[in-house]
Length: 116
Length: 111
Image 1 (cartoon, each protein chain N blue to C red):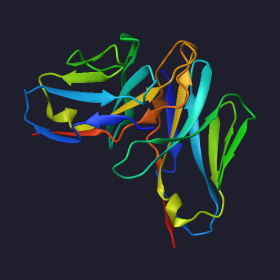
Image 2: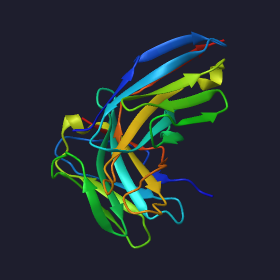
Image 3: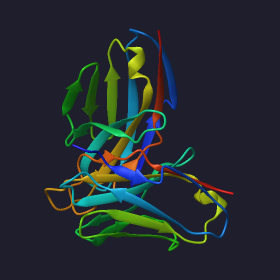
Image 4: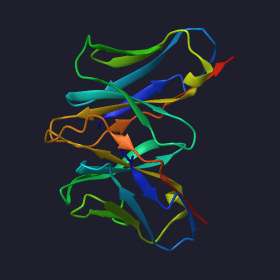
């Protein structure tokens, strides 16, 4: 069974640009979450999608947005990039058999974004 | 606001030297506490879920325990392949789909 796939794995952008990251969950998983990981802050929750609906959003500015497609694949977008957006962006999927119960998350290897 | 604090930040052990990692948490109603392992350049890998105080889970050389305020990850007779960063996370309140993570303990096992 294929794991969670994230693309691209590495990317370099400059301040003011925008970026789109993609995540393909494990087949059959309908919940997709996004996390930002930095050395100082650890993993911080960005948002979670289930059946194309955003159910929760973390404390990030509106420049961070996401969406989920009917096949459960998800994308996140960051507009007007800032230096502080440099981080590892992790996507995780979950089968979510019960509403509100995330339980075990399956993470991808992440997309490492560097903003210059 | 939910908070998770892990200690120590880093731990170096000799192979075979047992120890424990600590995870202290404050949440408005614990739904579940989770332990993950993260290797360099990889995403976190799920280890355990604990739901209520007094619960214990074991996997090979690892045992996780839970009280009302903290969780411990005990590692018995570790091997070099146990070297990784161990992350603790909590899910609070039914219907809240986010996990709040600690910053992790970086464990190094010296052969």
